[in-house]
Length: 303
Image 1 (cartoon, rainbow, N blue to C red):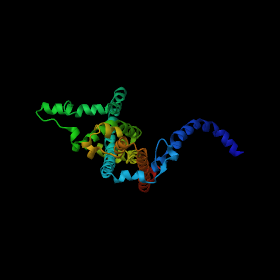
Image 2: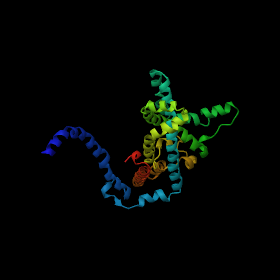
Image 3: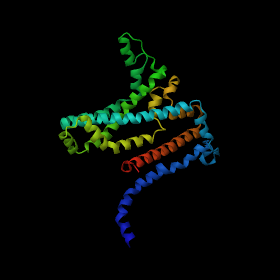
């Protein structure tokens, strides 16, 4: 009887959730049957089930290629650096906007709060090219105006770690700022008022109040970043450098390498193996990082 009563009580909520569950099953779980493509010599004429099983052969391409070290180093290196930069810049801009919120009118604050979104929307590949074009680019135009020679940006890989970092942060700083700003707004004023009474400087208030209060948000942002540490922004690494071979030393990542290989060979099994490999490594990375966080501070771990 108790079970029937519980079922009647919760039945409307189960029915409300049913469309989402069905969508999740169809969109996220049914395609998992296609993971076996990573272990088969896939041919469209044979279909998934009838294609020859070849074990781990599709994975060999990733590890035996001459670019294996370069693309792995770039993928992990950029992501680790950007995770740290996302946190630092996100908090810095959020603190600035929070001070604007405290000292400005609501209307002015609502205008300023849109800036991160506008910054994110502006970054597209053709704008990067407008700045970096050797002949007509804005930067080279300024250099020539001061009597300097223009720089062949698309022929020198050494500049691109900085260029990619600037473009990436220009694109993502808005989202990260909003996350940290939402947490900042939730911190009680009484903490800062007590700190003012004690004579604490702004820097001490940031290090002793703001950062500890933001720690759960910081851990969440870092954990989400670690979950994509073996993936890269394809548009950033492929479209912005215009797929220039001379820049591969600084711009080749697992995603761009697999795409170029897929275009050249048409080997869907190899690309599926790369995606499978990335997903497994990212999943393991999240588990390891969260395990470390749970040992250090159980209440701040995500699970």
